[in-house]
Image (cartoon, rainbow, N blue to C red; front, top):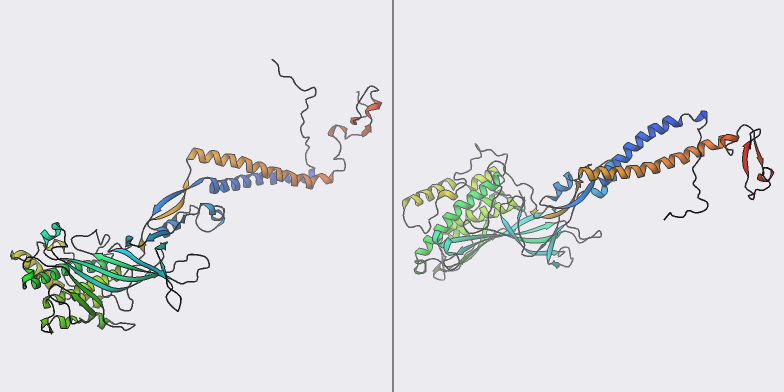
Amino acid sequence: MPIPLPDKLRFSYSLSRKYPSNYNWITPLAFLGAIAAITFVTIINVATIGFDSVAISTTNPNKTMTDGNPFGHTGLLSLLARGLKTTCTSTTLPLSSQFYSTNYAIQYTLTNVWRGGKDGTPKQNLGSLVYLNQSIDCDVTQVIIRVLGKYTQSPAVTAITRVGLQLETSATCSADIETSKSDTEGPTYFNLVGSWNLLDQPPHFLLTNKTDKASLWWGQSLLNVYYLITAHAYWEGASNFMWGMNGTYNAYIGLTRASKATQGSAEEVMSNEFFYVQCYTEANYCGNNSIPILSQGKAIDGNADPYANIWSSVDILGKAMWFTVMTDLGKNDTAIPNMLAYPDLLANLTANLTNEAIYWKNLSDSGIEKGTTIGTDHFIGNESFDPSTAAQAALGAQPSYLSTNYVCQVPRRKSGGIRALLILMSDILLLASIWKIFKLIADYIAKPDESDAAYCAGCLRSPVQVSSESVSKTATTTARSYFALGENR
């Protein structure tokens, strides 16, 4: 069945004419403008609709944000594509979170977070640390050596050594973390506890090597050797008593800085009186707090200080842990200089390393009962540091941040076909709009110069205006029409 059409169906079109001769410059302008417009519009569309934003996980948001913007960080394209710039969100670390620093030497546990508390401001305890790769400023405050006896170690570790050691280091850190635009509360403070055990712990010193991270390499060497020396010395000391015949019990050795001076010196850290000691063992508690006195086994109320033979190795093991954590957290100096960062101090700290390594090798080869089956395979460096011959360029702490995962939004190119189609469609729409605007401006400029522009092209010779009533008496319309005189109608 045919579709009925309205009685009068009208279509229309716009009339056009050439611009006057004095506007011939419009054509090359339009041609050059078209090329420029196509180029400009295409670049804009590539920057704005040629990419998607996708979420990725990264441990280095600073590098991700630097490398993630396909158009750089300055210039027009960067401004146009500002919605596609890489952005990363802060991560929230609740209390008891475990993580490494970006030097990946020691694993840390977050134990406390707070703001304020200084300059008269109230202390505000927080339940988590909001962190976005800010630089941290840390100071080691304590090293704890826990002796793990036969009732604490796992059977697998006990089969290897009668005495295990667990080293823990406390550090107080701060970071400039803004929680709001009007944040005026100052830095955020937090406490970290680093732990290390030669035998029964997660991996440590993941990126350490003698060339790039020499200070950490020497710290690991000292820890490994003096762990064995101290554990063996403790087992020997306990074996002289009745309770040590069948294995040792748990013990606690706490080491803090003895001096209260705001600024320490090289002489302070090289001294064997650097530590203030607190200890509790199955034999006795430490009635004295100085390592030189404890090494003499002085009597306290008729009882000797426990195990005089362990304290020289405890001093080196404690310093090795203290300054390894300083290095891992990126500090060459705090209130005291870092012994792993300076050649003369490192030479002092490792002065007896060669002798201790030889002693342990001979002990391992002797076959006598020594309370452990650990050999020298755990040794990293077994010779003392010689500042006159060893390369010193790599000594020192490298900048450190907390290593954790961040979620970042990064630009990613759309697939080729979809990208081309979207850019083409957008180009057509934008270029059509630009063309309309150009025509409106050009018409506005050119039309007023033609006094006869109101007449149609066919009537320009001698146009007159007549009424349709003079042409046909039967016409029912009152509309006016135009024609040239002398033409047949």
